[in-house]
Image 1 (cartoon, helix red, strand yellow):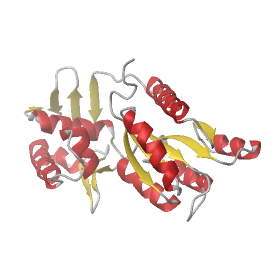
Image 2 (spheres, rainbow, N blue to C red):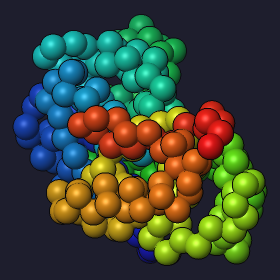
Image 3 (tube, helix red, strand yellow):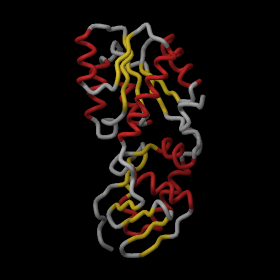
Length: 240
């Protein structure tokens, strides 16, 4: 059987019981997923905004704030509203299940649980999410910038084609496909350079600066979010 997590999606496990976290993380890593963990509601929200995981496994009874409150905060955030959530909790009552699903949880699994079933449910949720995504067109336009995905070409309304290195192209494409959403430096390293998020974050800054220079006035669309990362805005930049 092929590995269900061939793309290595990141899963955030949120639970204040270390034994549960260790068990869940072990089986998810074994299945090919990348795992990060949090033990409180506020930490979960901060990590979700920073890492933008593909899916969050969320306990209900957490210190700081309840899992319901975490889920509400996630669904209210621009960057996290579409992140899949699987609630994993000892609370079996039907009103809790209904409330969790009503707030936007994608699935609800009660403890004690089968780790194998949990991994299968994670895979099923991610497949549904992927199938629901629109198929991208070859051409992506953001303001004066046009990206031809098929030809790996970038053109500007005022300058014509822009010569970019493969890394600069992947960086611009990533920012454009996630426009309006802040991208952490560590996340960009993982996505563009396929590197661990704690290695040479200055590399991102240098490439962003070179990309801005090559884009000219359109480079103003790449915004620096101090202490975090970068965001590509869709608004038209000022004229030169």
